[in-house]
Image 1 (cartoon, helix red, strand yellow):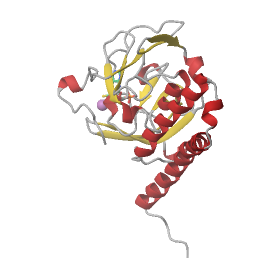
Image 2 (cartoon, rainbow, N blue to C red):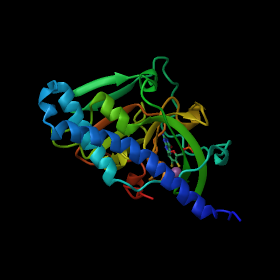
Image 3 (tube, protein in one colour):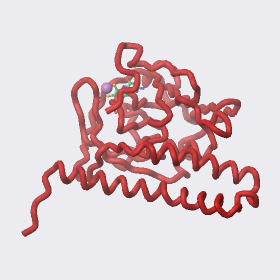
Length: 249
Ligand SMILES: Nc1nc2c(c(=O)[nH]1)N[C@H]1C(S)=C(S)[C@@H](COP(=O)(O)O)O[C@H]1N2
Ligand SMILES: [Mo]
């Protein structure tokens, strides 16, 4: 007789599945780099490509050491009526040609939502937790932050190191968060442009918000206007109100 899975087992099974999924995605490139390196093929690559590969390797090793994953759920478990909480920085009308300002060291540029939509899409269904005492299973879609960094080759301080923190804020600068680099490159951290398979609503942070499943909700900044990198701990809205800076779960 087939035994019913308890909900705990079910979550564990899904977590393992998710981990294997992410793990395989991360492991394949490592294999490629090992192959390239071990056979001296790196010397034959053009300098920019070599740099990209080395950069990817650095990010991936961070990912592999960061194996703590939030449990994931199925689509049918996702809430249809997603809770709304906190509207700081969402007051002003959205500009027609919304662009996100990005800065990494000397490199300054702007990206549009359409630019981000050309990158691989990642969906996640997890239990969103607000420190004020509620939680909900929610379904988000967007681009993994680590893929965004890789694509634009940002977040790298020098050839050896990544910056320590990522800072993000709303276009008006009224809401802001600081995220430690290991959490930013975590495979479940995404820049989300969809909720329940549809474009984000204004109250949930359209056109783009951060989603960090391994942290309390106050780190998941809605309406991303600026993204920058630094070694100094960026200011953080809720941390300045006395809440824990890292907000880890
Ligand atoms: N711009 C902005 N982002 C924000 C907030 C906010 O007030 N303004 N509140 C935070 C808090 S405390 C939570 S719990 C989540 C809530 O996201 P939701 O409104 O989509 O449920 O957004 C976070 N991001
Ligand atoms: Mo919250």
